[in-house]
Length: 165
Image 1: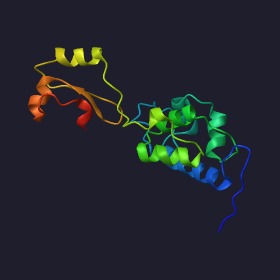
Image 2 (image 1 turned 180 degrees about the vertical axis):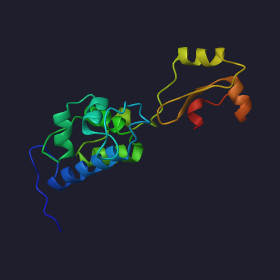
Image 3 (image 1 turned 30 degrees about the vertical axis):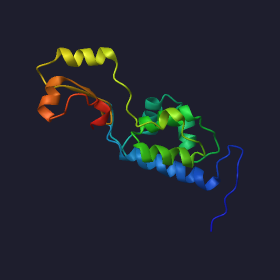
């Protein structure tokens, strides 16, 4: 059984290593072309570069590198959420990321992940009628739809977009 030590960052040394491995695995699994990142030069490793993740998460490259290397640094819940979004983590992966970082998931992150559609967004959908239209987020959760979409997909009136995905 490995010996774990508590550090000033409040995270076990073993968890820091696991956190780094998790971040690296997620980073390497993403396709830069699919994310719209320009192909500037030949890639030696699969997936995103550390600097690309740092840029997407709006954190410093050195800081992100240290986090991925398992160094004893503390990440705020806001920063962990930004990293989870940059790495396109699903709900389970986000929970895992927070657990490894020794943080509790913020209440705003514990929702179903679907942000409400603004009145303006719904107005745009309604103006597209008779064409079926939806608005979805990056994870393809349906945030809103119009009447033509309801007719096409057999959605009964009175149902909300958050009930469909």
